[in-house]
Length: 432
Image 1 (cartoon, rainbow, N blue to C red):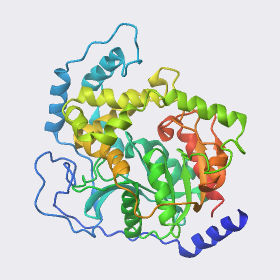
Image 2 (image 1 turned 60 degrees about the vertical axis):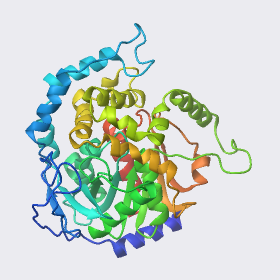
Image 3 (image 1 turned 180 degrees about the vertical axis):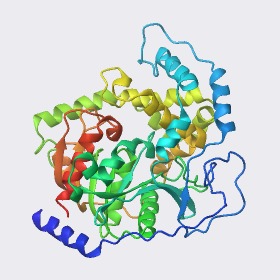
């Protein structure tokens, strides 16, 4: 392991490059419903952007889109619920009513826009899709480039609380040497990125898009971090671009038992107990995977037309996948959840985002990833939807760091930003 780390340190020092941004001002709309200012809600302009240009982007949703949202919320028609069932059958009606009332009367999207626009947003065309991304440069010139990938039903907004500590650790009481230049794309079909118009955007192709983005930004060496689909895509990046990815940090480590032999060999009793506990906890929560993996279009007609339906579909995941003891707001604020939900609504991307499940199951990879040689870290949060023992993970990855977190769940950057940041820093510190 020491030789491997030393090799990656030397490679990083020798090949890290700095960014040369091409700033081009364009009036063209993009292949997503929001345009370069995120304000248009009508048909896409026929004029297309220069595919090699990196264009500044500002979030500015049109007033009529927000007015329409309010109108739809005011006409919500909720279903009945069996008394006393709480979250047993799905999203609790009483909590949803409370959340929808706040969405209509208390939530301030414009305030969230201002907060998110404090970061540096851009767009560029990769593989024919207009990709939105945050590119937050560190004040430390020699900072390590870090690509962070979200999952579903997440988005780039999950990472708002970790961008500052990662890019400018000194401002948060940390070591300037731990700084990162952070790149956070919206995956194709998510958020302000364009919606693919062809089949096949599986994790492998998503990884290719991200690799193309980092290449265009001038980074030939970088770290990768992700959870949920971000971890699955990160595996593709680390496996297929091992000459570029210096280290892979996952907060969603997935691995089955090694083929052949005893699956319990090298597995502790504590690991087995945690694995079985997480499997039991998630056993009745897998239905969404079957629907999104088989008929995402049918689901989309309802979720794209009803903000109440969209909120119910997503908040169930916030409730069920986080460390909250039954109270979802012990893990997230209403504003945090609704910012993410509203992003899906105003961009109209709930249907296109769920297609990643279909594509993953129906588009086999061209380059099947085997053992990942890139140094890999696993941050294991106790309320994650699944758990893989270290011995299983080591059969698939070059595991050099393994952390069992004291608390937290699936949405690590939102639930436990300090724990996540500390682990990311510690891991990449050893690769410099």
